[in-house]
Length: 255
Image 1 (cartoon, rainbow, N blue to C red):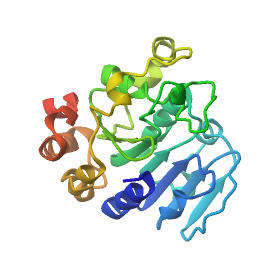
Image 2 (cartoon, one colour):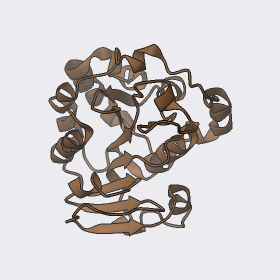
Image 3 (cartoon, rainbow, N blue to C red):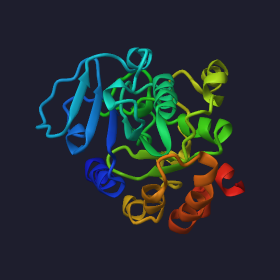
């Protein structure tokens, strides 16, 4: 399954009221939204037809989230679904996640694009191939070390995979507190040391299996004011039952 049909199905399952997209480009994925949508991209060139309640910002994500009220475009309410597809470099993708989680809720979902490079060259920080993921992939290792409370599911969509992140905690500052140390540890020069299990997709979940999982209902049924601690046990059980215990977060499973 290609990534756009998968994202379309996610919109249908989650029924978000507020959607965020970082990296709009031509608007192909932004066009999937049917709710209040916020798009951020300093150089978008739209070619898709858009039919939603839309706010477009021609700026960088760092500048946008540095504003006094990043949620002004949603009336102060958190994003329910976000798609991170901005600069394909590790440090920017990580910062985008930090910003988005802070402005989400425990029942929100964040999706990264380009998580599964198919070759070492495709994962290079300095682009020299036609198809390019950049070095977004290290965020997986960062979450495993610093945020085991998160539910993290790599999805084997074509062409270069997605990453679902759930069980969010807007008040968690672990990544921000350790940002410099994380960059020093996980940002590496080319050629990139992409783990073999990512290149051959041994540790990813089939898109159809993710879409039929029971955790979507858990998220949809959660109260708007649910806390991370209250949501995690049900989310962990649903993830374990649907896609495997290995993908239920340590923090959630321990709750």
